[in-house]
Length: 482
Image 1 (cartoon, one colour):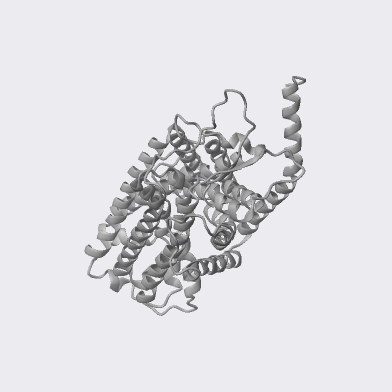
Image 2 (cartoon, one colour):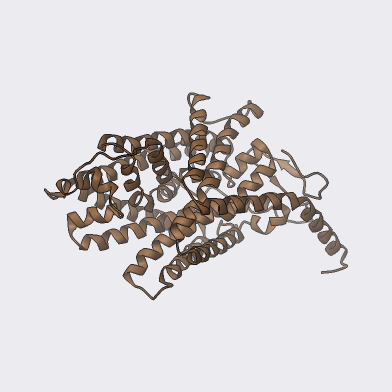
């Protein structure tokens, strides 16, 4: 584990499951509070399914259909997305069972590459990846609620900000409340999606498929279709951030990952089969609101109100799960870098990283404001997050190879099958999506990359900041100044 030379950073202590920076011991000082096992397998599955099965399944099928030739290829793309995600989940199962830690990806990158790349990831997650996802989901909720009850031009922004504030507050109350809320929201979300599936498979009007006959599309690109499919599957890796809080221990993480991906894949295939049954390929590809068109054809205009509630509920479920897991990386950042030590405080009473939640909520609110200024909030934030996300997911895949080599004798409760082929496929997929997210997106992607570069500058300044902080503490200790 590399450290900053010439600084007054705190010494590190290597433990069986993670590496962290510890303050110098003081007389009668209590050990710092840390995450404790508080989540069941059901809780963890609810978090992962809640993150992944969000509003994307109601938006991206049109783009997938426009880039596939025929219903068979359309459904195959979604099945393939499940296979690719399962491969990634198997890689994460080895990492999470071998190195369970509330820092998740941050911890894997620290052990594999040292603190500097891990710091960049934590910075990116705090300023781009996770907070961007929270703002994006909040915008979806705000847009739908504003259609039900509008308060003027700022309605969507107001509701989006209110969602961030309320969900952050719920998670601050305690892990049991946050996890319980997630299970309730996930159950309601799955119920809503089941309504869409049943409507599409069992309430199809006789003229539905005829009204939107299949037509050969031009310029098909299975590769581009897979970009949208895998974006819709995105979020399963969030299981890494709750690995240290699972009651069933290390072995339970492999079950959580596999069960979540299989459940998500089944839901996605059935939903898209419903779309195909009602609208046909041409109808899906030409629809701006595919789920809305399905519900209108099956249940009339009242179905549009119902699907609006379902979409808003799905986004709310994903937003809560994203807030729940996102604060864990901020906590890890504060635990390992003294400059951000205020983020690394864990409240043992509520079992939550309070300051990490507050900072994450503040940044998400700032991004909501940015989305309002650009007048194109949803698309801008999608572009903003994608390249940075896939870059670091690629690094996590590479870290599996590095850690196998660096720590070959460490006990691994779960080993990824068909090594090294499985993680190699995962890395190649992530590299392709990194390329695609840069090629197919616009200015938002450049802004996200620019924010990452700001993190590089901050990283270069850390030694100086650490020295200044050390001197400040020394002065306070001498009683010369406050």
